[in-house]
Length: 145
Image 1 (cartoon, helix red, strand yellow):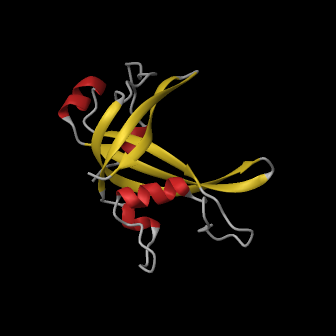
Image 2 (cartoon, one colour; image 1 turned 90 degrees about the vertical axis):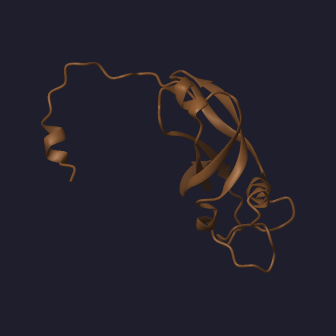
């Protein structure tokens, strides 16, 4: 069993990395590992954001990043109705609809929840964005296998 107290009392002599090599831009087959939500305040109102974390199982990617496990995130801003439910109207939550479609889960009349995405596999397009802390990999689009 892992002992967190032992870790917290460890003395280190090496410096930690301050930059991570992002997953290279390109198209990959990936698996949804986690789906979470958070709320941000934008333009004076609270807006939920869905975060989908995709794991890419590729020895080529691992060789470039130096990490065995390579995860990239996809953030979807969700459109809500005034009463606080997900807006299912025309032109609303299109990114979520496209994601569900790619996963074969966008059917009217069939019960669905966000957790149904976990474990599903699709083809993702990874792009980079640059910040003051370096480049980051993001999922730009998702499509069915």
